[in-house]
Length: 615
Image (cartoon, rainbow, N blue to C red; front, side):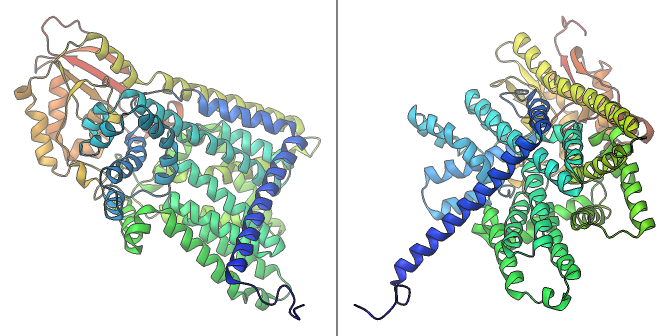
């Protein structure tokens, strides 16, 4: 009977509900489209499933190493943060305790949410088994050493395995996105080669062996590049907004994911440059505001410390991270160009690195010579690498994880050049030979890397101490994290009293270097039954390590201990104790036996007893 149409007057609640339903339906449609693309790729390219299976194999082998300990301190940090938040909030429910727990310690990004979900099944087991009170009490323990020993080994084993499985899933997804990049860069053969080479690159495999934020960030970053490319080609704002969301997630996982924001900006400008009316294409304030808003909200919510502490926490995290990289040597006295070379050789291996450099040079030369118009994806890939290089070139050092996001770009270009050559009948045999050499050499490198994971020297040291120490024996160590040493769970370990509550302010927990040196040299006063040395202590004896010049007294102590002057005998040794004496030797070692993330190269155990059997 009313003269108004059904859409003219509508209760506010009904309007909100319909908007929500539309958004949910839209999200489902987008998820359905993604699944359809993956399904189409798997059906159209039978080789893809084998490449993804290879990625599962190369990353999954050795996933059990170091249990119930951690591969490195970062693994411990990524798991302990959500544990601390859950424990303190359970002990004192309320927003204030939650906020204090989030802001206490090293500020982490979206990994706190990710690995909080990983820990959820274990917390359910704790509750159902009636151990909640015991676990809540663990929240009062400040020392990470004490916490590791006090928490049941089954909990750490489950947490680390589940966390590494999540990283494995992101790694396989990253290999698939690299395939998509290659397929869109040129053809499916390009995608096959790029994905295959990534699954066989030791640096990528190494990062994927350790739970952390690097692989999830890389996954989100590659997703941003793909969405940005779609925006350039179609001009549709939903691709731009999705790219802003993906880029925001990349930043939330790791600040270097901010390259995704630059890529999206380049896509906006490139779209306008290619349009018939450049001015009109640039004048899209709603698009820019929407993308900026989505990105900022994602970053704000995605970084817990920013969510509860405000934007100042983001600024503090950014300045602290950059400051640490521009003022420290990184453990090796070398110029920044050497760091770049070293990490690429470590991460890709010499054959892939040389082939990648050659392919990139060929692609650039052909584009300049023929005055070709680069494709939108080529522009975006180039922009990402340029930004990474521009930022890192100002640092004192770079780690493998810093340059890993450029690996897919290099491998996509390499795959494209090989595909281009393969189309020429007179070069097809040459390409087959080159691919065979790259696959075999890279495959051997990955096999060696996986072998090093399953035979980690710290695991050997742990087994030795478990079998040979008596109750009450003490083991003295000189690392600043339980993850860096090989000791049985529950063992009596003596270590320097690190100020772990200051971990936010410095990546090194040794805040008083003089006191630490004196503590090392006063070992005879503690008179431990066993002493454990790792490659970090041997660095005090290396001619190219800054630590040797900074702390000569520590080097003298280590040298005297190894010589038996303190009355200790080496009873077990695992790994290779040799240290490179020149940068040339260091580069050769990086090429032939790379020290990958989460790996330890050497551990030795010295026993005080007079009847110790020398090893």
